[in-house]
Length: 160
Length: 160
DNA sequence: CTTGGTGCAAACATTTTGCAGCACA
DNA sequence: TGTGCTGCAAAATGTTTGCACCAAG
Image (tube, rainbow over all chains, first blue to last red; front, side, top):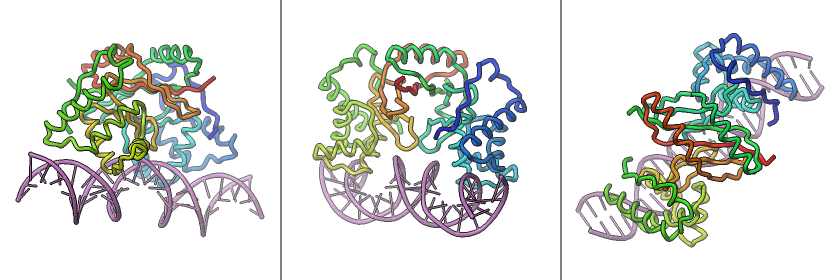
């Protein structure tokens, strides 16, 4: 799909953002992206995005469904998956793969090219920023005549 | 599972290795690991490992099945999956996730913590070495009292 | 004989899709 | 009145599992 992606924000404003600072702009971005494709900003889509922003972490489709249910919103699985695809296609949400069984997702604003600390024993996952990876990444690409579109770095750790 | 993992080799001997230099030791490692668990080194398992070594690249289970078929060996899907798990558990093969649809695998000897260049347009995947990542990774872990077990770095690129 | 291995087919789990009905311009 | 959206249930997909039979010590 080709919804218009939002630009990366500078690292400075992606840290310690207040939710209220974020919800509105992201909704606006989503709404605009949808409009450009002749699609609609429906209540279901709004609730899904709101819930993701509110949760602000790594989640699975099922979990998102539960969160929605908890809030009293009943949205079907199909709609959740369809909306996740839309959100991905305009770079509001990104898919994170580190487990065969289920796709994980997270908000992507300003965090493209995230680093994940995956606790091999507990399954816990932490997201951190490693800006220096961008330089490494871009150097590699440049030397090969390629252009980096994004990256993912995952570190598997244990507690010892 | 707890088959005994083989140690990482130094970067120097993982480059330009001849297949014959590799096949034999890896088979031996596998055989020993199996024996320690009271498991058997069967013709099917041998053929699977041989085929993986011969192919020496990133592959999917299906692809491996085809390769085996091409060589005139008929091994069942179930056995392929079961053997891949065994090979993973003794660190001869590693699973690589970058695509929801299918698990990819590759030989892991000396290459733990690989970097993948994933061509977003063609789907082509290239494996490269970025030893400097290890220092970054270990620094992060150390500062948090964690121990790095491995890492994965994936760069999504386009041709421009 | 006992243990483990194989192939097959059935089971599984997540994700996708087809379709009928709905809502809004 | 047409376009897109939803929910449901069915389909699709990659992987795992149960089981009957086989092989080797």
